[in-house]
Image (cartoon, rainbow, N blue to C red; front, side):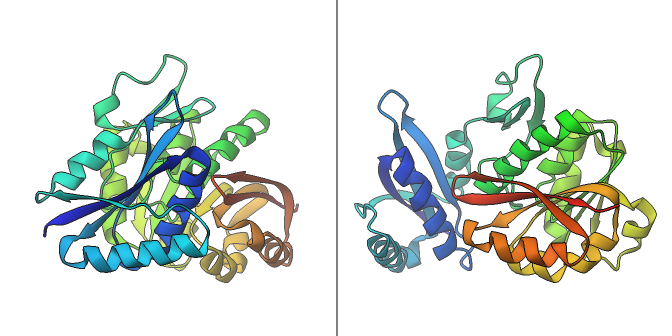
Length: 293
């Protein structure tokens, strides 16, 4: 199906807000949203939505209404794309993401990692998580901080998507890792990314809605859990997540907006989790909790 790229050019601060709004607007449509710097010297960014051409006019109207409501720029450009061209174009636009010693890069940037960095090769595709989204990057930020204070032996990446966070743990630690997702396509992608990053022997990838899958019993209890999903599922899974944690376990939660902090912290406190710290990246909240005991 032919695609049309709808794009807005603006400054870095506005680009972060525009990207977050458009991801929310087009979440149900499954249309990719990307944000990238086009002029480093002047801090100019482009935020793009890749919509089906037959729905491009409707998409532009929805973009305009959402951005006007947030008092953000609405000068929308158009670029018709040939079939599949938008995939290659998106890949070219994605620059490496760095967080401490972690770097996430695509196959078009194999020369980007430095000798001391934990490099992860992740190409944009069907599964969420190239490191560019604020939730994933924020989790990497907090993972790096937690690794300065603790060493972990059994880790869980809940809602693994592309597998990037599980791979990050494997690059930094000789830990055994379980990576799960409710989407079998994501699990397939995660397995392939683990292979490409030479950590497949230490990461078990499973399609697992909830915590009923036997993998949780076989691989747990976990002393590190990273769950980058959304507030609703995080709240619903709090009891089972806590039950699968070892005493003293570190839990990193994301997919959250800042105003959801109090509700999530209170829910997890009821299940034996204490709040340690919070971090915001690109307007997304990351929480670090610790299981009592």
